Amino acid sequence: QVQLVESGGGLVQPGGSLRLSCVVSGFTFSNYNMKWYRQAPGKERELVATITRFGLTANYVDSVKGRFTISRDNAKKTVYLQMNNLKPEDTAVYYCNAVLHYNTDYNYWGQGTQVTVSS
Image (cartoon, rainbow, N blue to C red; front, side):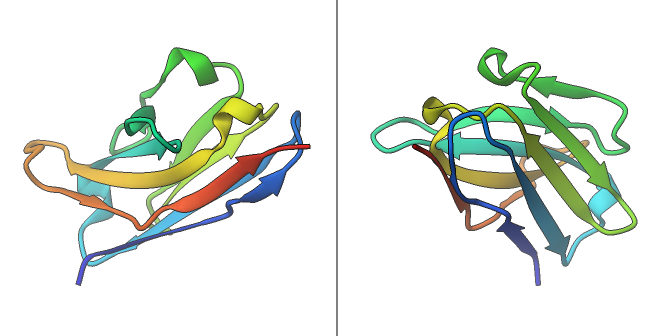
């Protein structure tokens, strides 16, 4: 059974930090590129960061460059999103997504974790 379970969300003040985790099971983690998306109320889901299957390449949306870092531990079947210098506009539900590296038709989603940045 495929599962992606996110954790680490919460309420944080502007300028603060959070670290999101996504633990997966039910598939071969190292065969999948991993992504973090977010969706704010009333907005479309947005791709935030991507990391390739062995962690050699990472990409970010411009709005988080220099503040967010995506990483993965294939032994622990976990992908992380370290978020620093958080801003109110980072408030959203964050989702992890697994995409098979040679066939994007095979992809899985977590249930999401809420991040709220507010004073």
